[in-house]
Length: 213
Image (cartoon, rainbow, N blue to C red; front, side):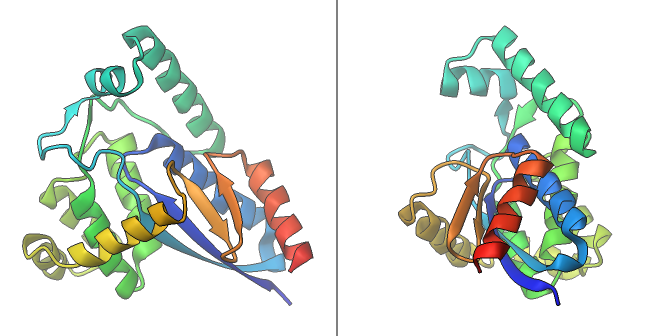
C-alpha cells in the first residue's frame, strides 16, 4: 500500500531554482511509483516584493542585489540552463525579472479549484522558458486557461485583487517559520529540504522520511 506523503513547496515563479527543484521532485516521485501517495501544495514566497509592474533588467537587478558582475551572472545562468536541461526543464532567455504577487493570488485561487500544481508548472514555463511577464494579467489568464481554469473567472480574481490577504498571511507564516530562501520543501510538516536538489537527493530524502514514518 502506498505511504501518504504531504509536500509543502514554498517558492516563487521568478526563482529558477524553484523550477529545477519542482521538476526534480516530480521525477523523484515518479521513480518511487506506487511506494508513495504524495500530494504537493505550493505556497507563496516573493523574491521581488517591492518591484514595480514593469519589472527590471535581470543583469542590473542581480548586480545590485548580490553584487555580481555581468560575467558572473552569465556563468550562473549557464549553470542553471545546464541543470534545467538535466531534468528536462528548458530555460530560455530571460531579460527581465518581475513582481509575482498577482501570480501568487491566482495560484491561491487555482488551489481552491484543484488546479494549483498544473498552473504553477504553466507559470514557471511561461517565465523561465518563454520569457513572458508573470505579472501581466493576459499572461496569467492564458496560463490559467491552458490548464482548464475558467478564463473569465481568472481575470476577475486578478482585476478585483482577490486573495491578497490570504497570500500575505501565508508569506508571513512561512517567514515566521524561518523560511528565508526558496525553494523550501517541507515533507509531512516535519522535514525540510532546501534548494533545487538533484532527483537522487529528493528520492533518498523521501525514502528516509517514509522509513521513519
